[in-house]
Amino acid sequence: MKTARLMRFVVVMLALFVTSLVSAQAINSGAQPIALNATLGESLTLTLSAATVNFTLAAGSAANAGSTNITATTAWTLKPGRTALGVYAYFAAAATALIDGSGDSIPSSAFFISDNAGASTALTNTVAFGGANAGLQIATVPITAANRTSSRTDVMVYNINLTGGTLPQLPAGTYTGTLNIQAQATP
Amino acid sequence: MVAVAAAMLVASASAQVRNSAANPIALNAVLTQSLSVNLSGNAVNFNLVASSANNPGSTTVTATTSWVLNNIVSLVSLYAFFGSSTSALTDGAGDNIPSADFQLSDNGGAFTALTNTVAFGGANAGLNLFNTLVFGNNKGTHTDVMKFNINLSPLPNLPPGNYTGTLTIQAQAI
Image (cartoon, rainbow over all chains, first blue to last red; front, side, top):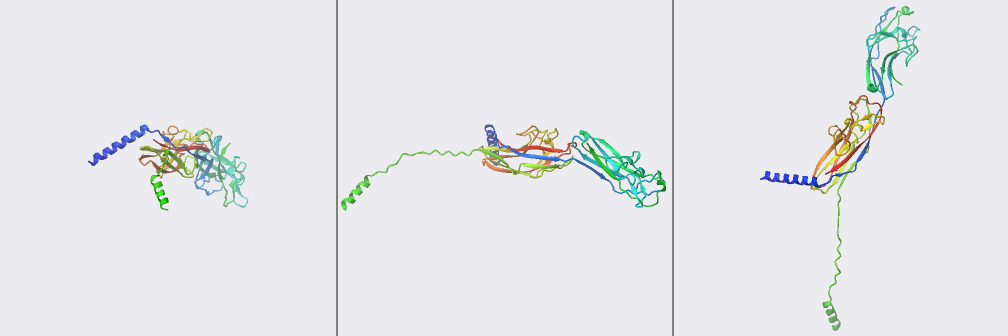
């Protein structure tokens, strides 16, 4: 009995609803706008897996490997119009890449980097940063619409070659220096 | 003295009440149907991070929908929509954020992209926020607290720039 009454109520309500839908016209509220403003900034970052490399030097040796390799991860989001991205390693001065503080130096030409298992190359070029003849372009990336936002990694292996010039006579000591890694997007 | 009193009694007994004609005033009160949406704010900013799925809007916006209806049964619905699904936000240089990457969370619910074709706006550019069936008591309100997010993970090559657009909130009763 209760079920029948309920069914009757449902049927009546459905009939009312259908009738209402058929006879009624839609009523619309005013359209309320929300202004959206989203800003995507240009960015270019370079992070290193480590910030220290040690060398145990052997006098007159060509092979003085760094204690560890370092991975540089370059990530970018660039505006249209940028056509190239470069990653550079450099010292501030070619003649004094590493010094002992007593006037003895290891020049950048004796400092070598192998990037991503490539050939080991001395830092003897003038690049976008650093001193003249004190740098090396590690990577060149053409930028297109397909890679305006992207990243790359460079695994750098280091070596100091003490065979050139007067370096076989380099006095014993502790030689320190700072190698910088930096990226640039152009134009 | 007795004569005066007698005269007054006679006059009183013979006088009749006089009424003017009845002048009707027709009363006609109309409560018109109404449906309105009010927003707590009308601007939302986003600081985008390239390729990130999480780029929340700077503020929430509360939509208050109010209605007075004269149907026996009505269905009140609220929609959020863009004019076009492909260019919900644009930098004016041909780069767009589609409505599929614009997400809305209503009253703490899951973030949902605006990918449906609804009563207003462009095809595949909308989202139905609520539907309420109204019986008999045809006056009511509904509050929707909306949070916004832009998902840039499907747009890894979106160039830097300033992207603007208009999200519209509108209600309909049938």
